Length: 359
Image 1 (cartoon, rainbow, N blue to C red):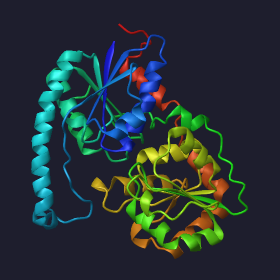
Image 2 (cartoon, rainbow, N blue to C red):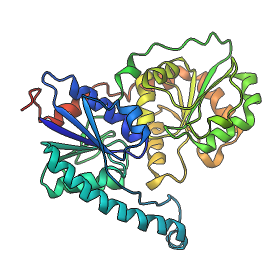
Image 3 (cartoon, one colour):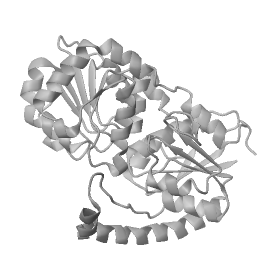
């Protein structure tokens, strides 16, 4: 059996694909796996492309729109309109590249995790009438999977949603099995993370207030690659990282007393797998308001503390940290209740049609 995995643009799409690929490879008779993406360094770093997962690349492009902007603001934003027009051409080219690749690979199934990279691949699969399965991590489906869902044989989701199979979001098993990192700190350990690309707003707050934060906490800071050069010098109570592998991430999350994080669905899945006491800071301009919907869903059930970006300053952050630290067991239990440890295995079974035997 041949299976094509697709999805990407950010680590939030690629990390779950890595977990699903692992679950497929662990089946009794593993299928032949291919990944079609944009050929980025992040993809190769997170997916471990090689003999067990053959990686291919096609062109694609984003449709940029910003949550909260008015229709007039969109129409007046000429640079964004120009980039969208350019990227529409890239999607068309990627569609024909995908047709060629799928005709060459001849897979039985294409599995889309969403993200702009998946659009030309999924459309090509629909034209060739290859069985298409989609999975959405967020409460609100992304644009790519909303389009591809019209052609999908099955759709799955990370949060319960009518008309879709609820599996939860897959998490890398290395993150789950990692032991807690030992800090030996007599201060609360507070972790700041902004997703695979970092988060400028969170980074600027930490950089500008690092001395004040270090007076009270030991800081673990995932900056993203672009902002690491701006970080203060590492110290016993300030540890900056640009990117960490799943095992390291698991150890850091389990060792932290409080975690401040963006509200991407896969970040939330990682927090749930590690039972973290979390403060969620949804990106205010993220496409479709997805992070705000994710954060609201999680915080409404008492599993995390919501801190809106427009209220973000050093005083609101320290107040939130101290509150969550004082109630961390309550938040840990709430987050653990969201965990779906069998998500990757359930998706692997869905993709192979319920059989562990390749054909």
